[in-house]
Image (tube, rainbow, N blue to C red; front, side, top):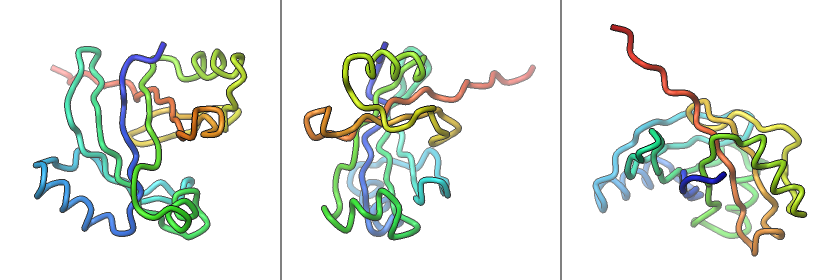
Length: 146
């Protein structure tokens, strides 16, 4: 069952300048950043708020590291802006299977590794009223040792 908006992905040409805009304009700070070689992006996750289930909502800023990446191709066609919306779920495998049974194309046969060690898959935008939709199961939160 989908539990929250995990993040909204925003494609940008210059990650550092875009991060600075969100920091200076709204006060959002980078919670996590990484390069995802498989997806061909450099990204920054800006935490917006926490939730009672231990998750959080983020803005994910995405800069392509190569022109042939999905985000690179999207930017070349559309320019900067909202790229996708991601919904959080405790069971990306189960929810993806349920959604697939309803006739929505799931883009990956098996979930892949996403930001911060999460497990992700995407739903085809043509089956979701033009919106690229991501399903995300956050990595388990490790409890501090005492």
